[in-house]
Image 1: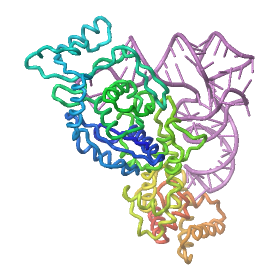
Image 2: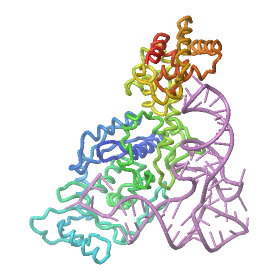
Image 3: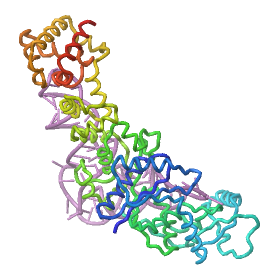
Image 4: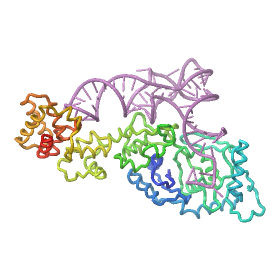
Length: 460
RNA sequence: GGCCCCAUCAUCUAAUGGUUAGGAUUCCAGAUUUUCAUUCUGGCCAUAGGGGUUCGAAUCCCCUUGGGGUCACCA
């Protein structure tokens, strides 16, 4: 069975890069009828934040990712880590180190001065004398002193690290007894039965340390997939300054989860020329072994295009529901279908769509100056009056085509071009020169409102 | 700086060692639309540089350059 996990540290919200690795882990687990677990890495109590975990779950819920089992909090697993640290102590694979932070600091400075790699000097590795008084010990694990460690990575291939270059006897438990990251990650992944670790490639250089832990404890080493980072326009790691990095911000901005997930799955992964992936297609096709080796730049232009695509292909019922979040209530509107059919073709985001709906439903309070100058001519009032009269005489106006009919009549009796009536009418209805078809707008707001809006412009 | 990773259009990417280096987004032009948007058609744009290996290299090897990541009693 394939077991994957997403293991964020609770920093306040779900990051867009985190959502990507979560998605990939989720897809791979589901595709194999495996399990996708969620673990909150909160061993650093000074940064612990309850609400952050809830924020992550909320974001998962929004995009539709479901994790299996209960959420594991590392802060509630402390006794487990202590137990395994003790095991290593007992078997002589770890030891207590009484060096103070100050001594460590001094050692590092010396080493840097000599242009050496800062590194613990193993002074307590084989210590069995009496410990110095009043010192709390940290626990260090015995790392190999020579040779190399190879990470077999499904994305990067085999990556060989020279032990002398990167390792020392690193700390697995602090002086206050709390365990450190590289230790707990390995212990938890092993205990939770994780078989495939899919995570950002910023963790690649940590992996040898985790392998040291796996091996010391006799745990099997999982498969690793280190997914390249998402970069910003400057080519740096994505940060808050680069716009929306909080997943929930995308909801506020009017993106659909489908578009966002589709966008993220195509960063660093592809399947031929295919751009549109439903969740089912992702589940059928995604394989972490196909992930690209290189980083990709985060660029929302394609997300906009995808979002427009998904809006166009969403049912009106569903759109209605989604638009409520953006303050638009349409359930009881009798021309709902006409309205949504017209606007779903022309909106990149739900926010845009909501705005366009309001532009139609709410009578314009002012008329755009430039539009008046360009589209409201001397003869315009006469034409609008004629159109208003024709509207009053007409019977049974319901569909856009009914209104179009009336426009056609007026245009041919007055022997004018369509633009002569279209531009002033557009200003009357919308207050500006752009927008959906006039016949559609009139069908939505009805005859009375249309006449009122024409009057409002004439009286101006 | 040490170590590690990476390198195809502006961006996301495709190409069993043999293709006029393909698709998508953006951008530009045309068509459609009373307008704007949509849609459709077309166009611009790439193998970082230098050496090898090979009949043949985007693809394999080496070097250079550029970029990124990581080096804690953070995660």
